Length: 337
Ligand code: KG4
Image (cartoon, rainbow, N blue to C red; front, side, top):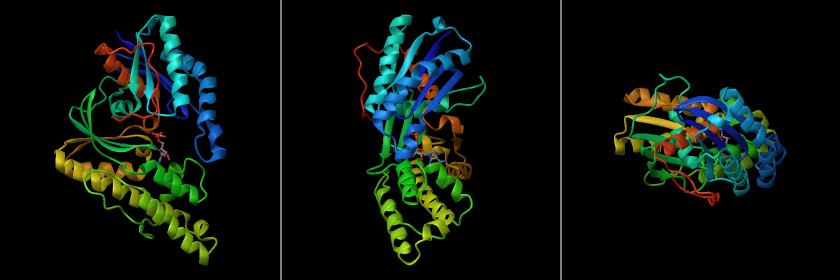
């Protein structure tokens, strides 16, 4: 029996989870409200909040799993990429607990965690992807198309050359005066709006790379010009602006995804990361896959944003391969797949 405690602290969510033989026993998350008034994550405040949250969150994960800490086989933690101060809290905690419990540590690349989140099973008969599969990873910091050949063998086929999809949602939402993070607010407003009312610029980037900064500029200019003649333009057109923005982001995402499926002949497609919680993105991917006879893996909303369940899962596979981490390991802010 292998029991992994996972710890995630790469950005502004402190999370701990317990996985036993690949099955999820618990997943506790403490989100940080402190950033809301600043319109974005403030790194130093995030580190301090992680310090306050980590003990109660780990404690809650162990209690909810119904296990004793002596049953833990290894501790998996996110080593990067992310905010260095935040990562330092999780990494240091993992080291201390690992020494105290005399169990090994396993380091996890946060992006691998998102990709492997589809292997987190809550019931033994939950379906998981078969290798190889294509994964669209879309979050606040990443927009990537990845070919997943094995647990530890992933190839990035394309990625954003500027902003990530989540940033496009958040930055456009910010100029509309919506709270941070704006993605969920755009999603909610878009449900009531006319998605074809406004047209925004779409990028012409060759290959499988993404770009979202042109869309952001085009959105900004549309608002700036319209506000000149109608100061209440944004207020009066919120839903249509949100729906048109969301449609454009989905079209950009899907264009490259379709190309990737064509180029690779993939028969399974998974999505992950915060933006995969978006209703429009979920529907567009599900429709595209149904049309082409491709098996779609769309995560439960709870597993789209940062969570330790995916970290524990990625750590479980490494544990099976006996890939342990030394005590002098330090976090890293940037790393690729
Ligand atoms: O993966 P994630 O939790 O962490 C970061 O990479 O930071 O992703 C957060 C991103 C934010 O940009 C947020 O606006 C976006 O995911 N997001 C959404 C939705 N829920 C979260 N974007 C659009 N629609 C949503 N429903």
